[in-house]
Image 1 (tube, rainbow, N blue to C red):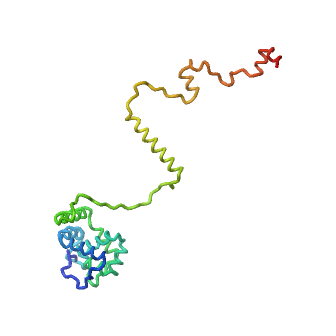
Image 2 (cartoon, rainbow, N blue to C red):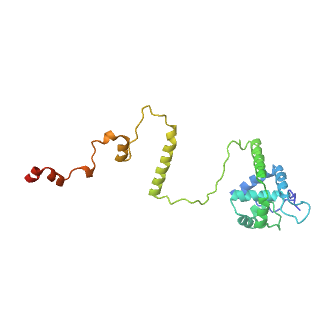
Image 3 (spheres, rainbow, N blue to C red):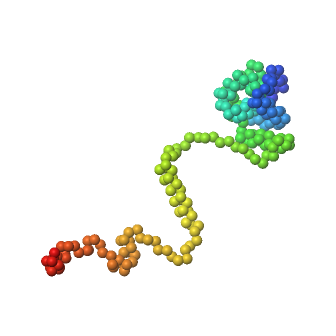
Amino acid sequence: MRRKFNPQMTLFSPMARNTIVKELEQISRILDANPRLMDLLFEDLVATRRPDTGREGMSAEQVLRCAVLKQYRQLTYEELAFHLEDSDAFRSFSRLEMQQYPSKSILQENIKAIREETWEAIHREVVSFAIREEMETGRKVRVDSTVVETDIHHPTDSTLLADGVRIITRWLTEGKELAPPAAIPVRQPPASREEESHDDPQRTEGYHTRESLPGPSALCRTDKGLCGKR
């Protein structure tokens, strides 16, 4: 059996003395002012089972408030179950009954039953309420991100320099397609002297390789007078 909310409020509500308790009271007022949120949540919770049979479980209001607590304090399901058993402020906000202590598996089962579309509808209802009450304009959205481990190398000086050269080279290669064509054709310099000789044989007439130059012994054979003077 499941209900949308518990009509009987507990008599043991803590007084607002801590900053967190005061914030939870303000959140509780917003949730109470939007009862349609319970209707959206109730449809997901009873989608796979009948609400009028079986043992009485968490109400839709309790599930929503526990989900808000989990996200508000960035808790795991195990930590949420502990605080719901240990903290009077958390129990009062969640509207739990005196002998009701949901375990981490129960909390996970109920909170995971809320669909993505339902969360989007809940957010739209809350933003519409904030606009009507002139709390927020709804023009800015703050999102949260989670840091995950990734396979990267250690940022040493040499690897950072290599990464910079690699990225700059890639940008220059991609940007070459955007450059306008040159008015005068530019001849690329050859990589070696052999390539240059294949391109223009006339320019290599004055070049001599080291093997073609005459050595001292060859001079002695061709010019005996010069060898005799030495």
